Image: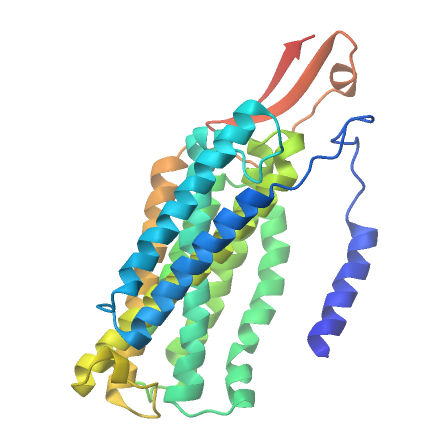
Amino acid sequence: MAIALAAFAISAAAIFVIPPSGRPVREEGTARPSLDWLGAFLVTTGLLALLFALTEGNVVGWRTPWVPVLIVVSVILVALFVFWQRHLENTGKLAPIMKVSNFHNPQFSAAMAIMCLFFSSFNGFLVYATYFYQDYQGFSPLQTTLRFLPTGVTGFITAVIVSQLLSRVPTYMMLAFGNVCVSISALLFAVPIPPDTTYWAWSFPAMVISVFGADTAWPSLILFTSHSLPQSDQALGGALINSMGQVGRALGLAVATAIQTAVMAKERGVDVQEAGGVEKGDQASLLGIRAAAWWHFALGVTALAVVLVAFRGTGIIGKATAVSNELAQSPGQSGSQLQVVNGRDEEATGKA
């Protein structure tokens, strides 16, 4: 009920806060594009098959014949989806779900990879922190929730600060800071700190730092995506980067579960199928949680490496760029589009 009321309040506030579009993306008289049902079937079936195989592999065992077969089938379906989207984009017969040509921009592709890795690390950290508090330490759901309260307070403060920094600090520095914070949070749960150590010594800093990172990297990636695409593709880009985050979360969590289960099975001297769940005060359970935390740390560090390689030297994406209305509306020119190239805001205009 509380979540429903919060969602309603946010939706109502959005009506007054989000400004209307300055100009329609779709010209009048053009037909509304039909939905690519085949593409939707291919990508949905492929991802579901992959997630199912990764998840059930821990239950039935990775040597079960249908598990690797299902993984191969899922990869083939996703590959077919990419080829089908390229075909639709080249022929123009139907609007594709995803424009493959957008990935020709190396920084755009890097942004998608960073979102996948970063959100997998951050979300996995939160999930396994819950396992640690509630299952291993034996706290009640209310006690566990209280230990997550700093994340909400920190998120509000960080959002206010980041909104001012986006127009002043280079994007690669914001992204690097965000991924460093998320990696440190996972590291605090991975290193062998005695579990009976007070919450304020390391768990509290991990909670705070993780949200510092998430609420810094997330808006930077969203803003970069909107600036790197033409106006007609910005909605698609926003959906794509959020989808990459959700896919990364699901895949990362499936792998983390496999790692955790394998470690617990080894420590208990049983097969993976019989590893069991997390138990209060159990050493095998603690080692499994720490192994998963190392995986989340590795994801965060990988995302940081991509940031430093692909975004180093990128300028301030959130800096307002003065675009002349007269130029955009000039009858002698068309196709005005803002492009972000190596951190420099350039206005590319094509003559009619």
